[in-house]
Image (cartoon, rainbow, N blue to C red; front, side):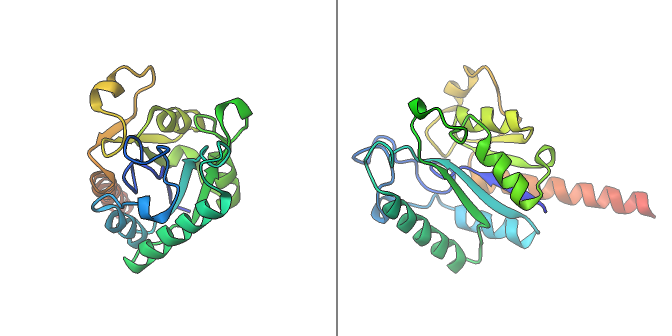
Length: 196
């Protein structure tokens, strides 16, 4: 299975930090798709990629919103993506806080490993696209290639200070997807030439 791991806030939708009450998307009215994100998802699907969302949502355990409210936001997000010709295979959330010391909160790799086991994903052949240091660290620890996008909460200047750097940097999900698909096309052309 060809898969891509994608963080949610700051990659698919506008990061809620600084403009929502709790700095989390707590209801659908706070969910704003980043321009081009739904199109990028459908492009990946059309080219044979399955998409898996991996997102920390500690606002649930902090009491800012309920599991049901998170489920409603997810349902509406998936419906909108479907309407635009895309599909997300699975959405994995960690609802724990740092102090809960779980295995699933990024930068830990529990959710990536769970998805890999369920879908037979080869992590070393998979990209993780995110907008934060925890995404890059989780992706690297799991053995994925990492892509950092500038559409979220972290600037290029802040990223330069990270100990672990992403493999690739793009402005947004669409930029990352266009590059991935071009690279994939070049690889398949080379493979077909070798086969002749």
